[in-house]
Length: 151
Image (cartoon, rainbow, N blue to C red; front, side):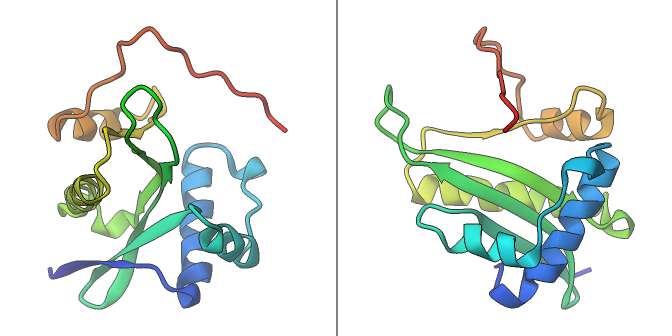
């Protein structure tokens, strides 16, 4: 299988949204996933907005990685890359596409002189956790807890 990673185009918006909805269903969060292609394009075109990479296998889109860069990481004076979502179509999992996405992310971090790459994983997603540990990902042990306020 020939896999290629490319930057998303506006014409990919419907595919990206379909992947986000599949991911939300897997994460049992489909009730909060109401993004539209129009809303996606708006945040993709904002300054420092959402970026999306598309994985293609033999010319067909088979997955996405959404990410953005923190404007400021004050202690280091460098940026931080945050991966918001990775989704790979079920029939294409376990073919190295996740590793290719992370290789792309590491390359982007180096190009932007980032201090680190961050992402989150649900604690019950054991397959993802095993993969992240295999590629060198570590659970944060810095005693910082992530809090959220839903708006």
